[in-house]
Amino acid sequence: MPKFILDDKEIEFTQGQTIIEAAKQHGIDIPYFCWHPSLSVSGNCRMCLVEVEKMPKLVIACSTIAAEGMVVHSQSQKTIEARNAVMEFFLINHPLDCPICDEAGECKLQDYAYQHSVGESRFVEEKVHKDKRVPLGPLVMFDAERCISCSRCIRFCDEIAKDPELTFIKRGDRVTIVTYPGEELDNPYSLNTTDICPVGALTNRDFRFQARVWDMSDTKSICIGCSRGCNSEIWVRNNEVLRLTPRYNEDVNSYWMCDHGRVNTYKFINAEDRVKGPFIRKEGNLIQVSWEEAYSQTASKLKSFNKDEIAFIASPFATCEDNYVFKKFAQSIIGSKHLDFMRHVDPNFGDDILRKNDTTPNTLGCELLGISPNKSGLNLEGIFNGIKQKKIKAAYIIEDDLITVNPELENIFTELDLLIVHSTNFNRTTSIADVVFPSATYAEKNGTFVNFQGRVQRIRPAVASIDVDRAVDGLSLSRLDKFGTKYDSWAEKNKRDAKSSWKILTSLSAFFNNKFKFNLTEDVFDEISKNIKAFNKLDYDVIGEKGILLENINKEQSIKV
Ligand code: SF4
Ligand code: SF4
Image (cartoon, rainbow, N blue to C red; front, side, top):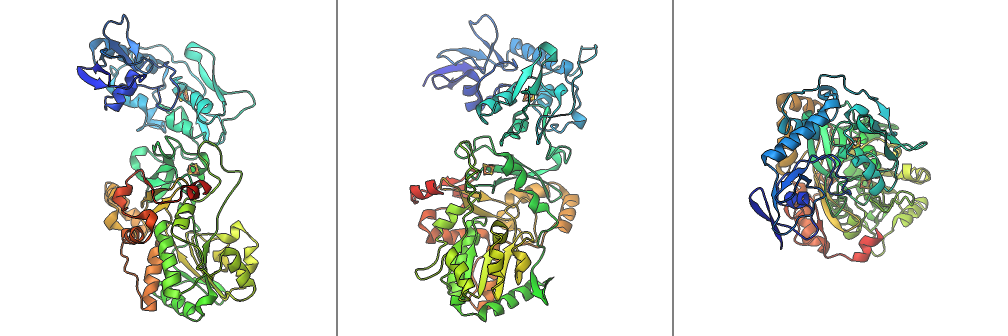
């Protein structure tokens, strides 16, 4: 491999790599604003100036191709002076309103002002004033005074969202960003511009002014908005989810996520209509009962039916662990053959960027786990017909609001003698249920989903419910602990009385004298990896932070999903 010298260190590079790319690959940080690894090079911020021996002037590392034998200095006196001068120019007209800026704490300009500037301004004239609050679209707010004209947002719309909506107008210190006449910044990926804006010029209207970044914990998770399974971070303060941001995974979502996934997949976690504790219908009303009463009454109700009269409907919104234990409960505890799940496909949702028409996170997981009827059992259609014909008298549904998806099912399900539902929130399906168990959301539990590619990926608890697996949750709870007594006492008050579906079913199994032996989510996954070929030899450590592509699966199956 060819090599060049950077700051007295010999580093290897691949042909065609720029100095900044090669340096980054070797963990050497050359500062930059306008460069982004997934966007074209514009070279306008000049922050990455470096000194190259035998070149007459400083060059920008983002567009200078590395060459064999080149000698580069990123820390020389000349480079540092140039960098400080670039920072001084940026700060001349910048409002320096960090105390009221949403970006404070995660702002490149703020960070670099500490590292690469002299700490005081020689500029005594009046700064140029520009518009402070310009809604560029339904989700993005623009503060023109903070903009450093890096053009990242423009390049993102042109190159990634493939929807050119932004451009520069004017020149010199009057330059600013606008949308094209008659256009708004409203492409399905618009909020990524707020992530890549290196300053607080573009902010997320769904989140701005809700919390300071240093007051929140962040936990690695997976978006549940479609079968892409974009890697995400869940940001939490006082046990409340306040925003989702994308987490880099080159094999799944690169640096991005869509606006739907970011804005529409967390509010139900904080909602007032969460099911808090188990409920049983008494004299027509759902009444909250103790867990013991809910388990014993549910068990005795189930025992009053013949096994062929009970149908089980699993969920592509539930984890592999929840679906696995549900299937095990249906088949080994009840002995029912009627098991299936509903597919959720929106032909208008997908695109050729990230979004998939399958609007659930775990359809392929359900398929691999064999969530389907036994030979003579009924599939979903068969179950609905069986209810109409009074052959199916009881149904057990987890984590899927089937009636909201298909309102015609309400008339069918009201024919049942018993409807048991696990749900995170009250909804149209719980409204006619006889028993409602409170299931934990994806932000309150451990577990795995399999995305459309056949990649198994982990979720972890980001907010505390009564029932978090502390033993396997080192990651988020150590972060929670950091906030000390104030946080924990608040969290204690706001913990929701909800459990993972597999835990509810494990407790329920004890009332059939055949208690499952699962204590932690990992115990369930261990059994899955032993019993289901696609998951052989996997555990949570092997899956890691970025997931792992399952090898033992039918590739056509993943393409279909
Ligand atoms: S709004 Fe942000 S991303 Fe866009 S040009 Fe200005 S500083 Fe760069
Ligand atoms: S593309 Fe799908 S998984 Fe990714 S953020 Fe959007 S909805 Fe979520």
